[in-house]
Amino acid sequence: MNFFRHRPVGLSALALLITTAGCSSADDSASATVPSPDAAVTELCRKLDDALPRKVAGLSREDPKPRSTLTAGWGSPVIILRCGVPRPPKMLDPKVADGRDPDAVPGGVNGVDWLQERTDGGFRFTTANRKAYVEVSVPGDVDSSGVLIDLAPAVKSAIPKGIAD
Image 1 (cartoon, rainbow, N blue to C red):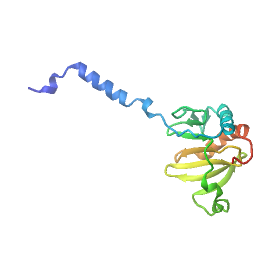
Image 2: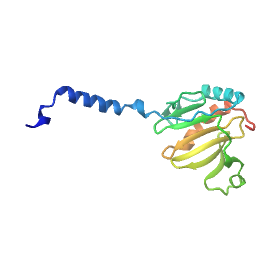
Image 3: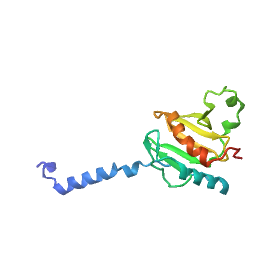
Image 4: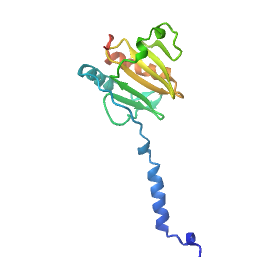
């Protein structure tokens, strides 16, 4: 007797349901560590969250989990913004300012200064010369210049120029 030939239809439907649920896009949501800045920086970050665009580099906003006004995301693979992060150690490295560090370079885009660092999967940009540090992680296959151009107006309007710490 061939056991598989007499399999009940209900079992096939259950297997299909389990397979479909396992591949649900709800399980594919990105996550980000939420920073824990002081109250003044948190307020600046809330203003930034209100000013952020719905689209960045043509990608729709899809915030990471856990939801927070200190984090935002766009697209898949996701571009992650975290506001109120600590100052990156490379920001104080004189080799970066002199252009002698190949993994971290300073530069500005549309009035916002950024420190660019290579990561395993792309680049991490952190604002410089602003009252709060804003970090943006960009996957390697996304045009990072488009991301920074789209984010510049929000950063300029919400995070005043100055030194964060």
